[in-house]
Image (cartoon, rainbow, N blue to C red; front, side, top):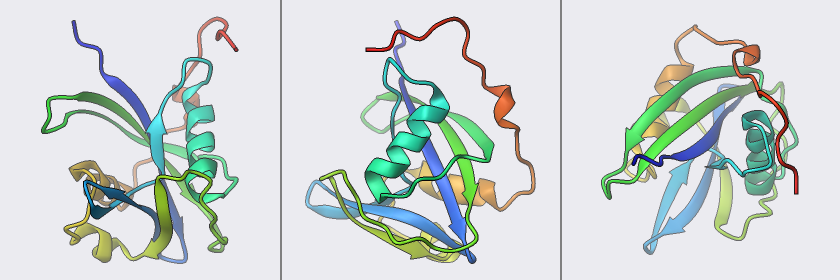
Length: 150
C-alpha cells in the first residue's frame, strides 16, 4: 500500500531573491526551500508556517498555493509536496531554530536553478514554477472535520 510522505515547502521571494536553507546531508551542503513534513495535528497551512519559522525564524503566512507535486525519490520514497508562495517586501533577518539548518541564504533564481547543491529536483522545479504567473487561492485547500489536536 502506498503511504507517501506529505510535505510542505515555501518559495519565499523578496527583492528578486529567494530564501534557501542550507543543511548538511551525507557530509555535503545541500539547498532546499524551507520545507518539512505535515504533522498529524495540523493543517497544510499550519505546517508551512511552522516549518518556515523553525528553519528560518521568519513569521509569514503563505499567500498562494503554487503547485502540488507527486514524486518518488531515488531511494523509492514517495512524496506528496504542497508548495506555497510568500512574497515579502523586504528580506527579513533569519535565525534557524532547527539544528539541521546550517544557514539561510537569499539567492537569485539563476543561482538556484543552476546549482548542483539542490536537495531534490523539486527545489529547481519550484523556482521555475514560481516564475510562471499562475497562482492558486489557499481556499482550494480545505480541512474536513476536526483535527485531533494533542
